Image 1 (tube, rainbow, N blue to C red):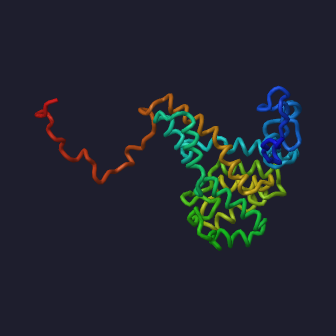
Image 2: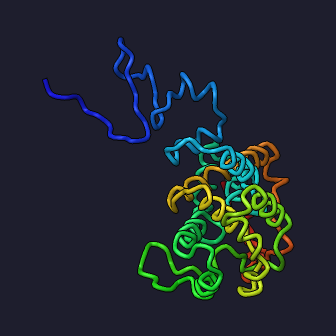
Image 3: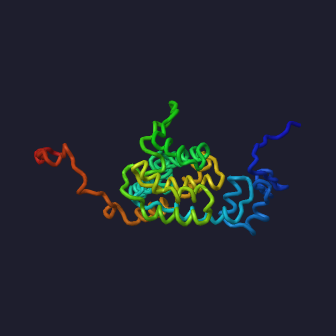
Length: 276
């Protein structure tokens, strides 16, 4: 008898029920019994870090992840990915489409997950060498090779349209840096103003997130996934809210829109002579 088809995974292992091979009796995540042990003894943060890293996190890592999750949970309605979800909600899209819109818009390299990816890879290469960071941020496209991504147009981790570092970014960096002072977060907090002066731009939340992910030992690709997931709660609640409020209360910024070929400027044709 031939061996049945098997999934190959170092993350997950299942033992089937004796009376139904299509459902699991026991599930192990990196060797830990999820429903028999983890669910009773662990927090959500501890479990997520276990899934991603393969190792049981220490208390310091758990607290850092929990606080980072709060900082990222709702970027707010000014943020493009949240606005995309709000557009889906107010436009009557199915709820899942609003989340997909948030993921799509939030995956880019202006405040999105690809910018976080670039920064995590930079942390791996540059460490905490200030001179190397200054060189990289002055020309982040050094060694750029043709890719699906265009060359980045600003120093990653900084807001090219910002005036000063937003208070929430400073507060998040201060708290997370306190949790792990001898870390990338602590180094970033210490050198924030120096780096801002060098780039001419204020620090953005992507830099805080990337430093935290690198301190947690996540790879660039893992950081992409984590960043996108952690920001979905805000996209979800704002989409649902706008769905209930309706389009008449949806912010449209009408006074800021100027049409060069406004059809209202031309007289409408007289249709009274047409018969239906």
